[in-house]
Image (cartoon, rainbow, N blue to C red; front, side, top):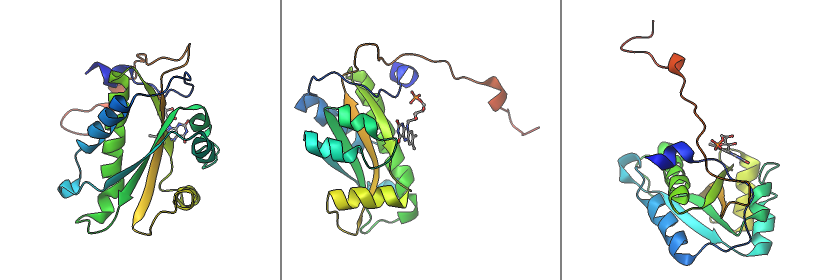
Amino acid sequence: MNAIYIRRSIRSYKEQIVEKEKIDKLLRAAMQAPSAGNQQPWEFIVVQNKNTLEKLSHLSPYAKPVARAPLALVLLANMEGLRFPENWEQDMSAATQNILLEAVELGLGAVWLGVAPNKDRMDYVKKLFNLPEKIKPFCVLAIGYPALGQENKFIDRYDESRVRYEKWS
Ligand SMILES: Cc1cc2nc3c(=O)[nH]c(=O)nc-3n(C[C@H](O)[C@H](O)[C@H](O)COP(=O)(O)O)c2cc1C
């Protein structure tokens, strides 16, 4: 799968808006992810409002790219009635990676901005969107068409020394 190899964190974007059909595809990809007991805890907030994007960029010192993005997806977990609540972050990570890979397929660039498990960041997002107690913020994805000079491209990270066969030593 080529997208796995060329995906990069893209942090600068063109002004160009991301079409509704592409946003739908990103969300569909997310919801195809595996989850513990198929519990599918995910909820999403699609953000295109400049003012909200700017506010999101203050969620952490590393969230500045979202102020420059035409689109953000805020990934949330609904903790109500989960069979395996302790697996919520794994479930959400799988959905996040699906979006990042689908973004590459659609000619977009994206970056994962970490929220959970940092309590201050989670509280910031909770407050910004006035989230109910059962909803936990997981991450924010800043998404757009890569700015000139930014592109998804292959970097070889294969490291043979990390692989063992059948036993440790
Ligand atoms: C859990 C997690 C949190 C991350 N948080 C941030 C972040 O807050 N800001 C940011 O610019 N990049 C963030 N990243 C992106 C990483 O910096 C990036 O994936 C890493 O440097 C490797 O580069 P690549 O994505 O281009 O392969 C995060 C990635 C992960 C998996």
